[in-house]
Length: 139
Image 1 (cartoon, one colour):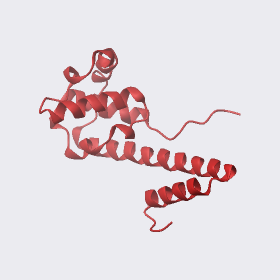
Image 2 (cartoon, one colour):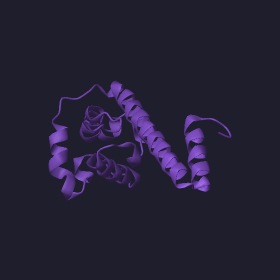
Image 3 (cartoon, one colour):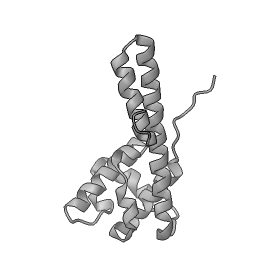
C-alpha cells in the first residue's frame, strides 16, 4: 500500500518564502497572517518563525534574519523564479487551507483513537475541536 502524505503544497511554500526573502516588507499584508504552524515543511516553519521575529523587532525580514542552520537552504529559495507580489496572498491562502485540512485530519484521527480506547472525554474534546474548525456551533 503506498504511503499517503498529508495535504500540502510545498511548491507554494517555497515560492512564498522565496518572494518574502527577496522583497521583505514589500509583500502584501495578507502574507504576514500565516503562522509557523501553517507550514508543512519544518524548515519553512523555522524560517517563517525567524522572519516574523525579525519583523517584530522592526528588522527587514530577509535572508539576513535567518539562523545559520537555514541560510544554505534559504539561499537556494531566494534564487527560485518568483511570483508576482500580487499573487502572494493566493499562495498564503493555499498554505493556510492545507494547514487547516491537516489540523482537521489530525483531530479526526485522535477522535477515532480515543473512541477505540473508550476515552469519552477525549472524544468529546476532539469532536468539539472539529466542530470549531468547521465553524459549527455546539458540534
